[in-house]
Image 1 (cartoon, helix red, strand yellow):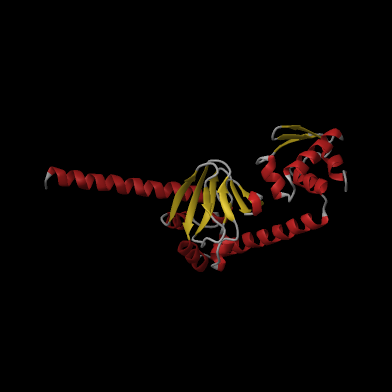
Image 2 (image 1 turned 45 degrees about the vertical axis):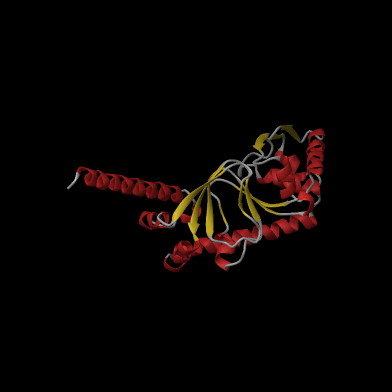
Length: 248
């Protein structure tokens, strides 16, 4: 065997080793996502072999409204905005997706185009799992299929809650509800707590179907009522019980 042939074989073995190591890393990433926790390690490694990473810069578009659905998307870190485009650039934020959350399964399973566009709010790392791989999992892994159904049911319930909020609650009630949802469960409702907004006030305003000006005005009104204290993205809720009962 010529030396250069030996070198080529050695390089191939190294490349294969790196490929296997990368699959293992992806499999470990998948283990952190609730949707994939029902799978055993062997199955996660198989899925990882059909997955790939995608890094997005801030404000980079992942897909446009109307694009065909080809993958399930998992957020490893960063934040993704799902939104509807509007006239004059006035988009409507439908959802903000953060670490260990997934999106895109509705379009994937119904074989329909994406109803929203997806854009990175911050630098983000995603894992993309192909449509065929998800279809195979649904067929051969009943626990995974149940997890998918549960996930879809949660999304449907959340959409109904959003419609109820937009149609039956005024702006102040929407903001108060949003802040209350970020308070930890089981905490003392009479003790102050600090919550951190997960995105810019402009994005949160759009998520609540409010203009940025209205969102800021409501925060000022709540601050003047001594219910909250605003410092950038950090909001101290002085008394969660009082805030919950305000403007109810």
